Length: 154
Image (cartoon, rainbow, N blue to C red; front, side, top):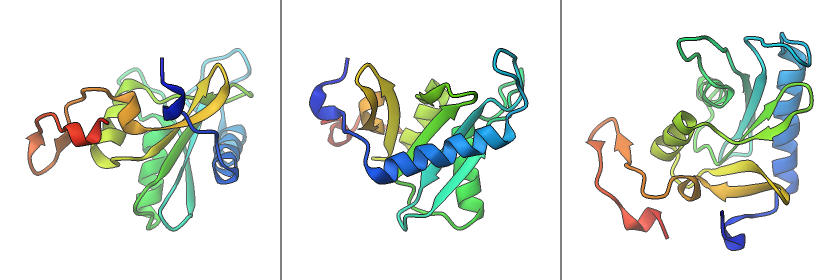
């Protein structure tokens, strides 16, 4: 359970990001309401300049990319830098969905401090990625796995 102080109410810009993710998956899903499909999740990210980028997942039994990773790649391919916020949304009105463990680790390693929109009992809320990764092992391309850094976990 998260402490109330760790959960923020989404801003108007966060709601705009949710809507972009929703539009991306609504326009591109390939599954009916109770069917499986390759494209069932949409995601959107916002960069430091306020630009938004979207992506959809590509399910595959080998572990195809989640929508969050596709949105991050789309941002990078289009000049997005300094990603500040991310959200994923399920098709057919399933609403905001939190990132899986693999996505959490990627976000933690590449985007320290990124704001993540999550579903909670109180509705959609926002947390820093560090809140979702207590005692995680940080990794970088240059140095591999790093020792615990208590500055990232206050």
